Length: 226
Image (tube, rainbow, N blue to C red; front, side, top):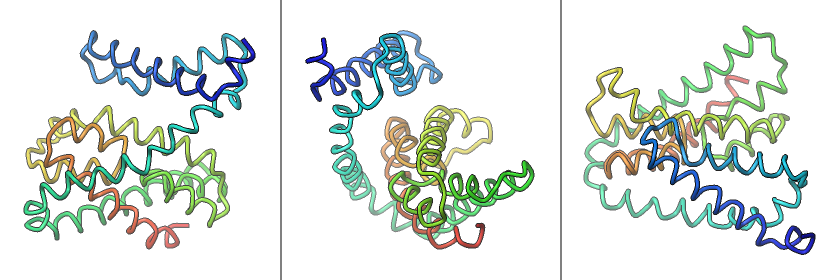
């Protein structure tokens, strides 16, 4: 048993099995609430807690999965290239839309922290929750925040976007795929973009480009809200 736990394959295998179970449950229930990623996270946490396995043991293998994050993000460029004509025709709305999204994300965090009386460490940790994780962590470290809290808030934000991406446009009557994609990418980075790609190629392309533009806007504007 100890030999299995000490192997990096343990973390990789547990992650894959948990996600496959999540996908199976999602197909059976056919509801966005049964998100495969959320189910996988709960299964992994439950398994580690039930058998008293330290999270460090799991991370030895699961960290290898992070190696695929950069290539997976780079693949999004293919979707953008396919929709380059749409992007060029809507570049100004996309640019302004991501600016509005960045301002809204930063402002709501600052206002919420002020109203709740949270200290500047918490503010620094939550300020970049709506951008991709590497950028969010870099900003947190720059402002003296807590990276672990930033990662948690970024994951929660992404999961919320993933769950609500198909629902909110119907609630607010948004029918333009460009606007839909920009909204997803500006608010919920890669996790939201994965859902945008399922919704449609235009939505996925606009969400993909919005990740980068939103990160740029956030880096430029974050000092104004800190």
